[in-house]
Image (cartoon, rainbow, N blue to C red):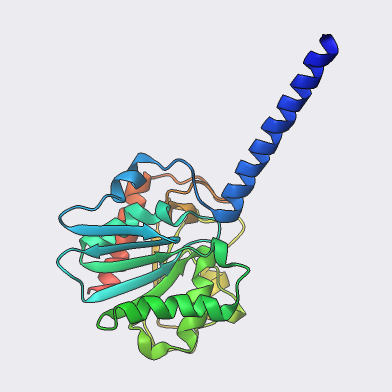
Length: 248
């Protein structure tokens, strides 16, 4: 009897362990959160002013009255794109159509397919004036696209971006906005590390007391220093800087 109980307990622990491992792997691989913060849930609801759609890791917020300008953004690699809903809502409320794309499931697909996804978004609304950009490491894919499609965009928006040689846009003539927090990463000076990859005329906007995770509701990122002002205030500042850049 005792041996049977031990066997059952062992089996139960194994099953629970496998379930936990599967859950962790699912979140890490897909970036999809199983429970969203109330602020995110609220921002994902359509109303009389903004229409919200989410499907296939694509978050779209569009003014019900229509838009003349669009912003295509790529999220950070590990993040559920829905966690950008609150700041996206602020942009859409101002009259900008925003398309947020997830790149977590795209890491192993070809560059050709990545670019085709961007093509599809732009072709769906050819009449809009488009801006493109991304958050942290998510900025690299759209910048590679922009390098060979400069005529398709009016400007570039970067939030706490991590750039490298393959996303170098230092020689382009498009206006560039770079928004970042003073507590972004204890080990990285974003201005010093990215300045060589962006044009000299880049507009730098610093948010005092913010870090790179504060552009979404995903949660803290490794090496970030804890932010010292409320998240809604940080996102409000980031949204205002972005709106002023796109709709001066």
